[in-house]
Structure formats: C-alpha cells, structure tokens
Length: 500
Length: 102
Image 1: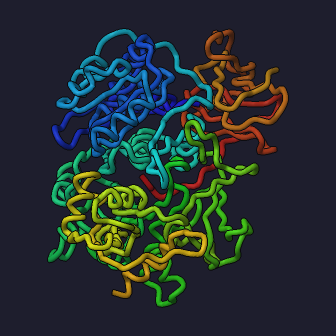
Image 2: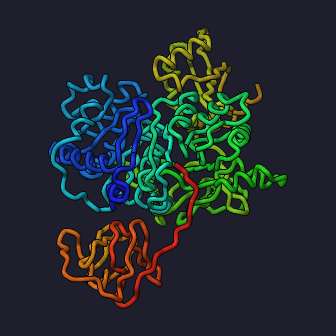
C-alpha cells in the first residue's frame, strides 16, 4: 500500500483535470503534472541521503508535491507548524534530521548553517520538480511510515504521531469512492497543512478526483470570495471559522453561494447557535460534522446532512440534541465508551472514547503504540453514546485546552507564568467560549509582598510563548485547590471561573 | 500459488488489469485474471489472451470480493479479464456512499 497508488489511479483516469489551485496566486497543477513532479522529486530525495521530508510552509501546490514525492521516495513526510517560535521549530527539526526541508521563500536562509537540514525555498522546490529523471516504482510495504505529525502533548516535548501507509490508505478506501467527483467539483481547503485534516483533505480530494482550492491564510472575507469565484462545491472548516463566516454574512438573508453543495466541520465543539444560523444562511447546503484525531488518520465519526436536517426540524429533544453530536462511527470502525476502570458503559453514560480499526495508528515515534492488546486506542477524549449510536463529545479526558481547533497544554502556559518573578502558583484551564470553543483562563497566586497586573502577566505569556497561549481571562486567588496527594483540582479551578 | 500480502500488487498476464490486495485469507491462494494466474508486476509479461469465460472485465477503483468475504482486491488498473480464485469468479463489492468529510 502506498498513497502514491491513489494519485496514480486518479492521474491515469483524469490526467488533465486540475488537481490543486493556489488561492493566493492562482497557480494550478493538473493530476498528471502532480504525478510527474512527485516522481521526479522522489528521485532527488532518494539520492540526497535524507531520512525525512519536512514542510515548513503555508498551503500551496508544494504541499501535495511534498507529500506525494516523499511517499514515492519512501520517506516520512513531516509538516511543521510555521506559527511556532524559532526555538520550537529548531527543536522539532533536530528530531527529523537528516532532512530535506521545503520552506517559505523568505525563511530558507535561517537553515543555511544547519548541517543536517537541506532547506529549499518553495519556488526552487517546485521548479526543480519540473525536470529530471523519475524515481523507480515506489514501495508497497504497508508498514512504511507515510506521515509524522507533531501533536501538542500534555507534558513535555510534542509527540510525533506515526501514520503508516496502511493507515492512510485504509482511511481513504474506507471513506471515499474512487473518482466520484464530477469535473466541476472543487473543495476549498483552509485548514493548515500540518493538521491531520489538511493531510486528509489532500488525500480524499485526490482519490475522488476533485479539484482542491487552497486558502493559505484564513479570513472569512477571503473564504467567501473564493467560494464564489472558484465555484467551490465542498469545504471543511473548524467551528471558529464557521463562526467568523456566519458573522461576516450577518445581515444577509442567504449566503448566496449556490455551488456550495456540502460544508463539513470538525476539530472542536460547534456552538449550537452557530450551526443553527449557518443552516439558515445555507439552506441548500449539506452539513456534515466530522470527528477525528491525528492518531486515527482523521475522521472516525460523522453526523451527516440528513441527521442535521432531521435534528434541526425535530421537536423531540433527544433528536434535536443530535445537532451537537458528532454522529456515528464510520463503517469498519468500532467505538466504545469506557469508565475509569476500563469497563464499557451503557447508553448516555460518560467515559473515555476508545476506537479500533484499520485506520487507527495510536503510535508515537520512540514510544511505540498506545493501543491495547486488542487494538483499542484511548482517545483521551471524554464522551457518551446515546441509545441510537450518536456520539457526544464532552471535552478532553485530560486537561488539554482546545482553542479554535488548536490543542494546547495548560502545563506549557503554567510553566511560563511560574517563571515570572511575582508568581507563586498558577493554574490554566479552558473555559467555554462562543468564539473559540474553549478560551484560555489562568488562576494566579502572587508571592507575598509582590505585585503584578493581569495585563503584565498576559504580556509576559505573549512574549515567552505566542499569542494563542495568552489567557483571555486572568484572575488572582489567595490559593489554588489541591487534593490530599497534591494534585491540582482543575475542575474546581474551572468552576471558580464560572462562578465569578 | 502464493501467500498474498496485504498491500501487494498483482498484474494480469492477459490484459492490462492490475489489483492491490486489501485483505486476504491466511495460506496460499492463487488469483487469476482473464483465466490466467496473476503475477508480480515487476516480472509480469503478457502471455496470452483473456479466456471467454473470464471476460467480464474489472474497473479501476472498484473492489472485488469472494463469497467467503475474506478476500478483497482493489482494481488499480482496468482490464478486460475478470478476477477469480479457481473457478469462483470474484464479485464487485457495493460500497456505501458517505457524506464528504474533508
């Protein structure tokens, strides 16, 4: 198995179809061009003595070229979050050397002095792929690593999730019908390329033969403009994006995007008010909620268009509530909820979500697999399943804050706060936010006799981490709640915020 | 006869057909296309014609299964021959259409 085979099938069937369009500069790539470029670049990668192919860049036609050329060459593809700080990026790079790294045109110089990193600016990378010899046939070993994705771990350094060829190919074969897209279909992809949804979007669109329009830097205005100008037929957004799109369309009676047949969303909790308003603005659009994780090669649960319409029109509270569920498991996957003792619980009982199936990896580099002996992967997400099999998410089983689809670890922010000269103790939790799903809130205890304002500490976090980590709410307490074994009781911290 | 490995490719020796193994039973098994055994793509050469009893054809992107349900092949290149194990012709698998998720 190899994801290259998926591209080979489509390029043989629709060689002249446009595969990717860069929404920024309008560059287009047909399926045949993408296939040929991947083969030529794979030959270069194989002769360069690299162990990984890194991608430190926004979405562009270099994204699929990098992904497929790495697969052809038999090297893991490692997209890296370009929003990280330079020390964070360097730390990740040091884990994937010797690496070939595609990066933004203005960033390449920074890596010139690194021995084990061969950096290529995007433009040069794309030009090089247009000529040269083609690599020999790719490996079909299902165990080959296709993608390494850095996840934001709860403790310490980010974990690198291992997705093997068998996981990604199984996901696509199980969820997409080959060549099902008509020539005029187009998918607008605005999730970043280092997110599993970005990888899944490339693979799903390629296997269905659909044109992908890439939006590198999301804004609601640009998204609306591209959907209209490129006659986009399908798109995926995270809840925060949909919220912005709905806001931008405020005052209009309809979205006026007649081509947009389907709109799917996922990556965080969707506020009921946003999805209800979106369904009013897009009455003829099919809405799908997709729930998945990096470790499961993307989507495992789907709330389809019929579910949306039935729920929205129902007066039965049980049915209506499904509008905020993530639906039912994909065929071929098994999902169950277990309590703290590992026992499977009944309908509507809360517990941790476990999943098993061909697309489920659950493996991290250097740590092995965290699936149990029967192949079940603990998602660390909490949830419940109703009597009809609809899954409801109820936050993270651990304490990771999911802000606008981005996972962040409270510990990371707490550590920075604790470095401040006036701070004695700090607890960071996620609190409900209409805009972000969850917002960052910090409870801080000052050292006796010391002072610091909330604004000062917020600035401190911004300077030492990055802006998404800055607590939107920061309040001072005399002490934080701990249990008898010294474990911070985050539930109580959270409750204090909602009481204030 | 050979042990089929998941993910491996097999090529027809009588038409352009090519498949990938999605699932296979344990033990040795021989897959034929167009009435002749399929071979590893690297060494496969066209050696004859599609047998009239095996001329149903295979379509790219379609999956083919045996009656027992433990063998599944994905057609990655279309061909004029039909797939079979011994005298049992493999059947095209119906796939459930799912909403677009990404």
